[in-house]
Image (tube, rainbow, N blue to C red; front, side):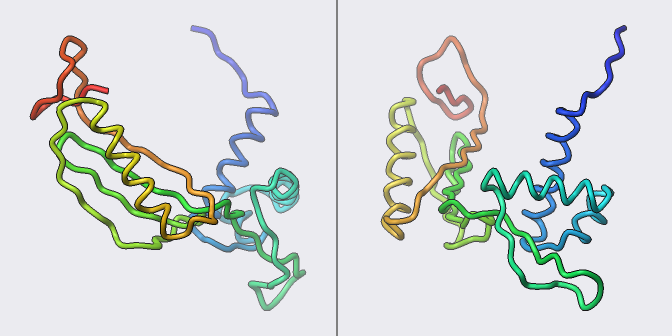
Length: 165
C-alpha cells in the first residue's frame, strides 16, 4: 500500500470548495464567519476569497455583517444567470428554476412521463428548457441534470423498470 501526501495545490482547491459550499448555504457571509465555519485561519480565508474574487466566482459588498471588529465587508456567490434543475427518473421529471444562489424562482413542477426512446427524453428536456427560458430570455440559463434509473445495455427501449440513454 502506497501512502501519498497532499500537495498545496490540492489543499487550496479543497479549501476553495469548502468556502464556496459555505457561501451557497449562508448566501452572504463575512470573512470571519467563513473562517469560523470552515475552521481555517482568517489570513487563509482572506487569500482564498481574493482568488475567488479575481476569478469572478464571488461578489464583495461593503455591508458589514458584524457590529464590532474590522469591517472587511461581506461576500456572496456571483450569480451568472439562472439554473434549470431537472431530476429525471423513469416515470417522472421534476423541474424547478433557481437563481445563481440556488433560491427557487418558480415552484417545483412534477411531470409524469413514459418514454419509449432516448430521443423522446431528449425532446422533453429541450421542451422544459424552452418553457423556462421564456420567463427571462435575457438571463443566461444553465441546466443541472440528475438522472436516475437502471441502464439495460442490451435493450434499446425504455420500459417500466429501465431507462436507456
